[in-house]
Image (cartoon, rainbow, N blue to C red):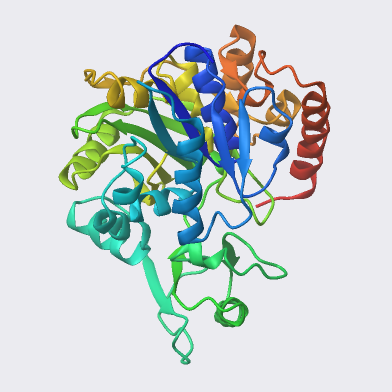
Length: 404
């Protein structure tokens, strides 16, 4: 490993973990250590991680802390700090809930537990939005502990999704979807009953469906250093999101944009909450009233946040400059035009409905202003290249056969 005063320990084995791993490799020539529950081809077949430590019980609180302490003991080196980075909601939640014990071995930049609960429990989050003048879709909550049917007056179609995603995904069931789009009260009751039967006992969100294709979705990434100073804000227009029912909401292509008003509005919101670390907002533009409406904020970098690395603000370097070197950077509102994608070019050319955006994509591809992090040139695994080729073929089939 190259001689830097830190060792990255990344929790996760999915695309997000891979993007963070290659960000460390790109910037520092480092092969990070990954910790995960199970092998996933994005990382398992890769030559970028130095090693991947697996533990099938990683999602359990006692195991999580004990195993991370074992990893720390195994890889600790004199004069080097261990940087801990979570790449999904569950792992970030567990770092935050156990931060006192983990700080004995690691450095990291995450919010406090009480703020996490304000932001991750959607009922609390939408109350915060209302308090701070942040627009959100019209939203109702239905408790799965109640037996009475949902009777609020809504305009169809509506979206149904769990308020607590971490608990929802603990009990997978046939036909499980990330988000349900329904057109009648009868369908609402059917979805409620199905989710209740899985053992989920928290609130369900029943929300106004904002019309518009994938390009009405927007993404905003923040890095706020451990002293509470905002260093980076981006604003991006989604070009495509996943179209399979279990993955809706995961963006597969984003074009960076600049909207100073929204960037600063979201900055004021996070700073008022004493937020630190990465934040990733999901928004949708509502053409009916001309407002951007916030769905949620992820308390970590998202899998599409890799575009900040491509635009000169390396995902890993933000952590390192802050936690290792104590550097504070002035605020940057990203202006550079760039296309992030994990789908093949043929999917972009064929399945983006908006003609203006399609033209723009052509131009960005022609100028070479795009990146697909999965095809990182320093990843030498032939097996992985083969896997990715098949995955690209499947992406074409997925978009051809699924509409949202």
